[in-house]
Each structure stands twice: as structure tokens, then as C-alpha cells.
Figure 1 (cartoon, rainbow, N blue to C red):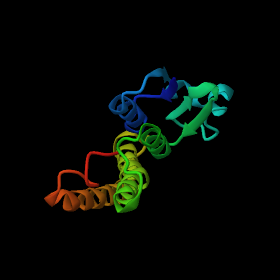
Figure 2 (figure 1 turned 180 degrees about the vertical axis):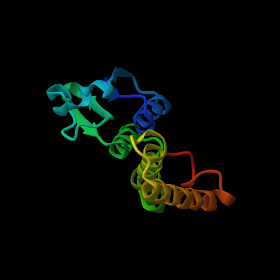
Figure 3 (figure 1 turned 90 degrees about the horizontal axis):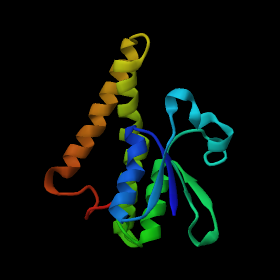
Length: 157
């Protein structure tokens, strides 16, 4: 059984979607970010970075944790043999777009939202910087998807 530790954020929802798509059984543990639950010793034992999401897989009697959304997606894909080609160019195409999201669109859109809507003070430079980079990254996605249905060949992580 897999224990998923997450919260209601875009990053926190990625493993839920993957677990559902893979048809895996899991227990959902909501980690309340507003109370700092992600900084408790119990959670830090699972993810020393103190961020959601994280999973603990105890299949086969041996328990191990995986944290960071991209690592979780790759782990689940490899565990089930779904949504990630096993080898070759198709695998690396899938991984490059996965990491494009993990290191690009996810953080940049998150920062844009934060500085535009959640920051205690408006910092025009920050709003403009993250807006421009978010729009640039979205344009990369739009351009890539002009003549294909999926970013990386087939439906994948």
C-alpha cells in the first residue's frame, strides 16, 4: 500500500492523478500547510525538505519514501510500467517534458501567482518577471502542441 502525503495545491495533486491513472491503492494523508504540519519531525522523517508531496511505499514488507513530485511520477510509472516508455528516445522525450514542468512551468506559474495575488505587498518587478517567464514557457508548450495531441508521443506522465 502507498501512503500519499499531500495538500490541495497543483503540485500536491500530481501524485493523486498518477495514482488514480495507474490504478494503485493508496491512503491519502492531508498535510495541513497552514499549520506547518510539513515541518513536524514525523513529516520531516519522510521528506527532509519539509514540502509536499511525498509517498511511502510499503509493498513487499519493505518501506521506503519518495519525495518531490517529478520523482514520485517517475517512481509510480516505473513501478507500474505505465506512462513512461522503458527505454529509448520516447523515454527521454517523456522525461524532458516532465522535468520541463517540474523545473519550469510549475515553479514559474507558482511564483507569478504568489507575487500577483498572494504576496503581502506588490512588487512590480517580481510580478512582471514571473509573468513574462510564465507566458514564455506557456508559448513553448503551445508551439510544441500545435501539431500533436500530447507533449511526448502518447498519454504519459
